Length: 390
Length: 162
Image (cartoon, rainbow over all chains, first blue to last red; front, side):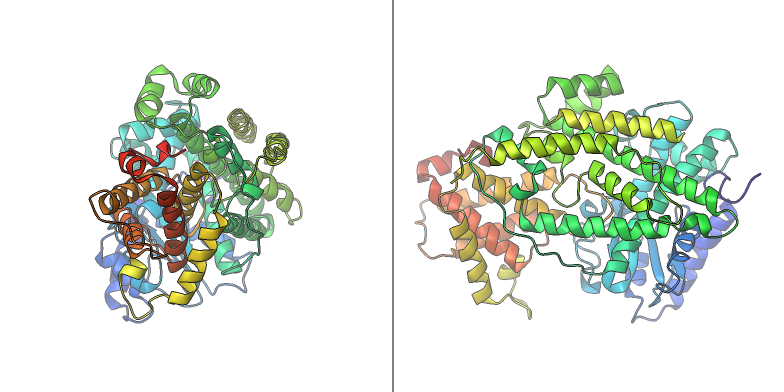
């Protein structure tokens, strides 16, 4: 049985073009007041209608889990208060200065959209960076077509050749051809999109949350310990801990949207399964990104060996060795970013929260996360107990 | 397929186990409250008093990374390039200000240091808030104070500060 969920990602090119044209028409008629975000995006030429119908479909399904929150969903349309406003933009086309500074959206730059998506709480807007969507689409397609079966290697390959050269792997027309590989690619990417949107919708739901945190501990650390301390909350900046809590809260708010999908509509069970699959795929890609960055920033022979085995020698040389940092400050900090909880901790928290939702656990295995946390706690205890502080 | 994703997640998680202002320079209608700026500056300046210089560098990097990563994003992207760009621009700016004959001002916060912090932030398109500039200026001042002038002027990178 085929439903609209199991068709290859994309739908028809006709619909795709219709959505693009519809967006242009609405912008032309948009009043200046509440729609300056849309108008500016349009005039700057950064709107990129990459599978807008899929974005609309997934976002609409998620809003049904919180019907009191939004009156509706729109993609690449003039901004409407009370609605979930989503814009798909190619961040590579953004100017380096903040395009939406005057609209109250700070940091709207190519650099700040590399995370893939950005929510603006005050206007109820989500921006999806299509450059990152295409990157993951290409890498996913490569894995499903066995061009590059390992996701880390596939991502590295896309980065090595560049997005334009990898076009045949993310092109809507190519992905819309009905093949088993495209179907699997479609499921995975729909699921990833569901998690990304659910997280950003979580930000919109919780608003500007605030968390109080104590000041950091300051110790005398060796360069290696300076890298390691990033895994220890006590040793990082207060703002980092506050922001990690906000991100975790957004994840958990998003979980309530994801975890209700099995009860929404006749295809709810299937949709829920796809969204859970994609959530795992999102973190797999995220861990891959970090692993590649770690390889460039560490002298660890163990990591080098593991990456070489994963990527193959040629790709390793191209993506890791050739782009290695002159001064390698260590790999731990990259696995423990200041702005977000580590991926493994997020997965663990998400899986735990999913268990309390109507649809139950998502099958995200957090055994590895538990083991990582044990090692992390042990390392932090050792760092803090050395009593070589100021 | 879920089993494949889970197995891959396991494998990646295991791998990670192995790795153990422009606000002041640009007077605007919402220019920062000077008293609050001074208070934040002073608090940070005192907080790192006696802290080893390389640890102050580490704090400075953390602060810049936090500035660079602001926003409600779904995932963390590496800002290493911008952090390195900032510290390089800051070092060059401070060397230009302090190593070419001019005598360092005793004023705290030093307008010259604030200006260089703002310039470095602009160069990396970092959107700093007044509190960020105050904290980073305090950290930069501590670094300046910690190094003899000849040594500071010979630095190639903040990595060389020990």
